[in-house]
Image 1 (cartoon, one colour):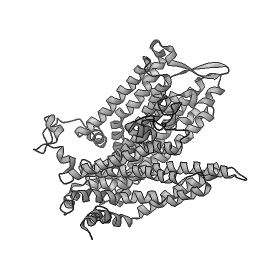
Image 2 (spheres, rainbow, N blue to C red; image 1 turned 120 degrees about the horizontal axis):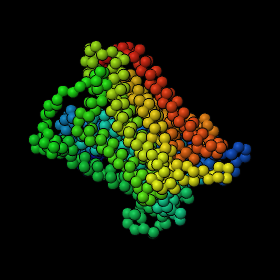
Image 3 (cartoon, one colour; image 1 turned 180 degrees about the vertical axis):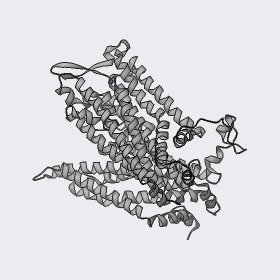
Image 4 (cartoon, rainbow, N blue to C red; image 1 turned 30 degrees about the horizontal axis):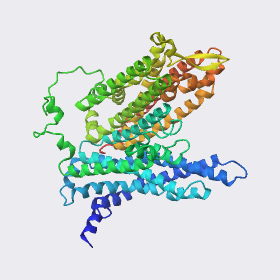
Amino acid sequence: MPIFLRWLLRLGPANPIAVRLVQNASRRSKHNYARSGYLGVLIIVLLWAMLGSTPTGDVSYRELASAGASSFAGIAYLQVALICILAPVFMAGAISHEANPKTWDILLTTPMSKLEIVLGNLFGRLFFVLALLFASLPLFALTQFFGGVPGRSIFAAYIVSAGAAILVGTIAIALSVSRLVGQRAVFAFYVSVITYLAITLALDAWLRSRGQGAGSSGDGVTIISAVNPFLALRALLSPASYPAAVEGTYTGIKALMLESPARAWVYGSLCLSGILVLASTLTVRTGGLRQIAKTSSGVPIHRKLLRMSDQAEHRPPRTVWANPIAWREAAARNATFWRIIARWSFVIVGLALGLGLTIAYHIGTITTSDYQFIIRSVIFTEVFVIALIAINMAATAVAGEREDGTLDLILTTPITPRMYLMGKLRGLVSYLLPLILVPVFTIGIGGVYALLGGLGKDALANIPARTVSGNALEVPVVLPEAGLLAAIVLVPFIAFCVMIGLQWSLKSKGTLSAVIGTVAIVAVVSGILGLCGWASASDMPVVGPALASLSPASLLDALVVPSERLAETVDSSSNGLSTARIALSVGAIISAGVYIGIVYTVISALVKNFDVTVRKLAGTS
């Protein structure tokens, strides 16, 4: 065999690391369940879409082709979403296991080259993601029997999805090679992927609302479309409703991004992946970025700049709370420099952004519709991030202590199960309170601005948004009680997320399984409540606003645009917004009581079965 061909094979199919990963992971039943569940979801969605979009009785070829095209578009979007959700899960091992310095020490003693080590880890773990992706190709091919779905669109959709999977995979490998992260960074990596997608979707919607997109009306492709796989796929599958720029309108990179966003996304993801692979290759045998981030004496750069010793500094004694577990959870989270920076940066930037938005609206820099859109996008993102932080902290609170042996030491003290669990809950919620303050302040400052009459600009504080009985209804730009109602619901909701995380953390063997289980439960509960509240708020009088308070998302949306979200109650009442606001307030109080009741029920059940659960998992790590 030629030497060059042998070298190429060792980089790819014959790479020892890739072969080991594929052989070992192929025997795991969870991968088989993931593939089966993936295909099962796509089949069910395709069948439901075809039955829902096809009229009853005799169906013409045109109607069948239209149904096939719309069904294909639906499962194409779903496939990209599932890949973005499942790819971090499959790549999690690259961060949690290979990031272990002991694993790297053994790996670097082999005669494998730097490129072989990086590509072996990448291809070995990426194999399952790409196999998962292309396993649905026969299902996509079936849509061609109905017409309306060209084969070129099918393969283009697969290329867009593959670009997303490859980019996520290379980022995971780069994090692993850097040695800057550990097992708990898996969740941060997952959150970062989801948050990036949400932010780019919001930016694209805002630019199109201002007419800065392509097309005659400015609601088409934007500069953001090329950096988000969903938007790139939308430009590919819906050229009529989401038009790209006419070919030849622009030049250079801007032409590629605005005229062919799907192609730009694929090229961009591959180029960024190549850069990450190159950077990983150059640093894999030098200790990664962890070694580069240290000075010659071995002290991290940030500690050297701040004149901090690498040894633990002496601190004066502190007053511990009545519950030492609660104090430890609230205080230990700020034990490192970067955690302190991350926490208070979120708080300071969030508060400044909320105040800056209201100031910009007052001086006329942004319009009313832009102000309401931006403030909704900001608070949705903030609440989403806070909930995920709460889930991660709670899901690792007990499982992490079990893994490092701390739980065994705590159980030898006089601390009771109730004191232990209540301490965890109180400590975590206390730590998260400054973060919860950010969305409450952001929406609350808008409510105070409306309550004060726009500081002399009543036309900004109250806008004629709806016509009821022939009269224009004055609606506050944000309901004055928005901050209070947001706080009433958000604090119990975050406590609910923490409690579910503690439940899974207590019953799970490891932190990763606890995090995934908690995310699944909270997502399902929040999604069902959110959909019910979203639908009932605008369709049911009086009861609808109360049900909207069950989910923080529907509640926050109703507080900013009550005339749209609570339309049925507003239109059917002779008191304008009064009835809707009262129902919304009552619903918020009831919702807070429901979340508190769930928390109390769960913690009582955990206390009752605490000893049995701990003994069952004793000694696991």
